[in-house]
Amino acid sequence: MVASADIKITRVAKSRVGEYDVNNVPFGKIFADHMFIAEYENGKWSKCSIQPYEDVPMSYALSALHYGQAIFEGMKAYKSDEGVVSLFRPIDNFNRLNKSAIRMAMPEVPEEIFMGGLTELLKLDKNWVPDGDFGSLYIRPFMISTDEAIGVRPSDNYKFVIICCPAGKYYAEPVKVLIEHHYFRSVRGGVGYVKAAGNYGRSLYPTRLAQDKGFQQVIWTDSETNKYVEESGTMNLMFVIDNTLLTPALSDTILAGITRDSVLAVARDWGLKVEERKISTEEIIAAHNAGTLMEAFGTGTAATIAHIKAIGFEDHLYELPAVEDRKFAPKVDEFLRNLRKGREQDKHNWMLKVC
Ligand code: COI
Image (spheres, protein in one colour):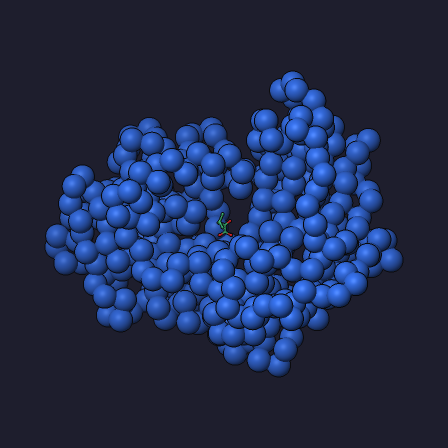
């Protein structure tokens, strides 16, 4: 890990944390005191610093703004009942960031910079980690290209930055989702399997159209056949049909979600039958009509587990059983919450204690 001695640390004169109830702030709007920055120039990473969170002066020609050479991660830190701050599966986020970097022709971030910067930042901003049952510190590592040049080519310069914000629930209520079959989130050979900033920008217009119809989110289908479901909004998608947990198999159009992987691992630990495969819209509707569609939910770092209460498809609304009657998703949600608070045995070694 990059030692704290190699990070130029400038602390805030006075912490802002006392101005907020960190257990009760809107998602993604209030930022912790400090941020970590590493700069890539002349073919190498250098200049690691932690400084007070602030706006960045920048050129309007910044290449990330024009061509979207920008990637990010979403991860969380939790505070146990004893006050210990731990990260959930940080190495998986580190590996996925670099997978995104490769696909977007960006330099990979060394592990010692990612983990060293993150650890030092958390030590400084420990008081920003909520201690309530549903709270966490949402961590946003990201990389942007920083050449000031109009011209489409990989940038020579980059910044890797980590900012943090206290977070509660992303969705306060179960969501109503619309199966989208005109617009697509990702295509074969594209960037759907990585966290490229543009994946999210392109989703906004179809999502707004769905919201205008009273839905909170869309379910994306595959762009080749329009038959198979892939993700929902910014989440991986899961169903319980006939006591089997089903989720679309990973491909280059689906993000390898860390919450997705965790939920599948816990389901297998509990002896539930799990299938990762193509799931058609037809199969979901048929299961609903046969009374075997017991649960549908999204998984993601921000959303954790988002229960789906109804699915819209071609002018029909298919209502699902009430969340209280669901056997799997509420239970795995609670289990993961308790694990992150240090109340469950961590048999997969997912938690990394920081301070
Ligand atoms: C996450 O779940 O962490 C995401 O990145 C989704 C979203 C907040 C963009």
